[in-house]
Image (cartoon, rainbow, N blue to C red; front, side):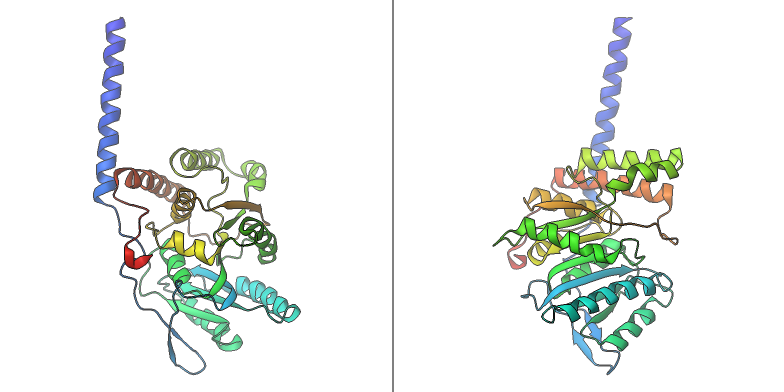
Length: 323
């Protein structure tokens, strides 16, 4: 009996090792390059004049107080209410504080609807200097779209915000306050994340057992494989200092939904302080996430993030020209 148990245990260990080595090999062989490698030249069009303007670089000194990067894929219906809310807040803030400057960058991730046209209408009305629109030739994923927007931003602080407007935009004030505390007097590196963790009990009560199990399983994978100390890695409302944006996004690889996790993994590995701030969040219809398959894809991405850094397929080291 004891011999049989030992054989089964040994067999289990061997199978586990084979699965782990196979997964590590697949992760290593299929590793994507950094999103910043071979960075394409980006041009913005002024809708009023038709003139083409080359996008700035994240490596340049800031020329605005705040950049708001909004990734958008087929968002012709949800984008207008979000932009109305955000721009109303930003314009009012600029009237109260005349020295405050901002820009909004809408990154159309290869939409097949009128997302670009909707965004350009705001640019035409408010001016190219306030609202800029970048249209990617094909859909690459939310992570890629955010990365392109970050690289073209001019702000001292850079906010990424989802196009659905699920997070109340005025909550940026609480997120900014947390960022300032992390930065202190002379700091340059900090990230403040909007968080829905305080709503978790309420959301569990409304979700099916299956979706709750998927959510808890995802959180467990994030904690075990990549990021600890941040309860909600997926809230699309994150504020970064310009230097922190460069340090993290210049090293980013993940193009789709799990890019937030890799960004925070990089930040923690580099010792960049991260704060989590409760925000007001409302679920908006029209999500592009397919509950089971999207969670499955993100789970695979989490495993691959861990394995690719472990095997050396990905590295935190930058090439000399990128530093």
